[in-house]
Image (cartoon, rainbow, N blue to C red; front, side):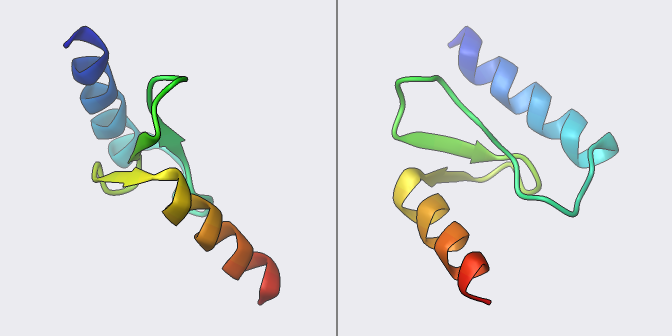
Length: 58
């Protein structure tokens, strides 16, 4: 529970003050799921890797 609250707080702070140009994620180190800092939405490693590969291809 504490790590989820910390993730939410960090995502809110990131949206308010963090750089928007690069993708950024946070989450427990053993978790398949991550929080996308720009949106605060949950995502997973498959989506993150697919986005990275698409970015490298363009």
